[in-house]
Length: 245
Ligand SMILES: C[S@@+](CC[C@H](N)C(=O)[O-])C[C@H]1O[C@@H](n2cnc3c(N)ncnc32)[C@H](O)[C@@H]1O
Image (cartoon, rainbow, N blue to C red):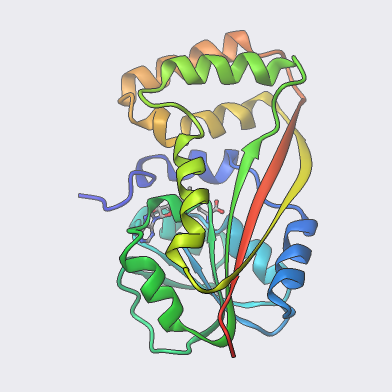
């Protein structure tokens, strides 16, 4: 059995999920005090490689880590020369001081908050950093996204955003005694409706509905969403933890 709930929706994940803007990578460099170019990065919870490819575009030497075999297979298909390791974030198979930076893009809320912080601090060298971030929807302008989010909220078995809020709030305690800098980056993408539908299908709380109901939900959204292209605004919340040198 797969260890990642995302394995079942790897193609939709890769096709539908947003990437991250340049400003996010600029902010990582600013808050960590180090350039990405040439740095050794462990991208944990790399999934199909959306964050891995963003970091590589900035010149980082990235090792992608995920416990989902099908997510990693999709990553390897898209980025054939990527170094990808099937492993658990809570028991990282790397020696101490293996990385200058460890990243968790949309993945910190899945880890064990006792074990993962210890593992991360172990594999990041002195003077290194940990960057944790999430894309969140920038709703509230009364457009299609607000209504769409309300429907997602009522279809889901748990409130959307709660897991993000809890995980975001956990960071100072998880790395207690270490310096944590935060920033929020606003950005947007404009994409065809089909991309939004793939994104919906890849959501963990839609996947939890079960295959038949999840498909029915997506098909309902196909009829309810306006025809594209659709403007989708985001706020990316970033926390960078600095490990003393
Ligand atoms: C929401 S996806 C994020 C993928 C990618 N970083 C991105 O930016 O889109 C979360 C990923 O974390 C992985 N994951 C969850 N728990 C994990 C763990 N304990 N160890 C390794 N990977 C894990 C899942 O398999 C999934 O691929």
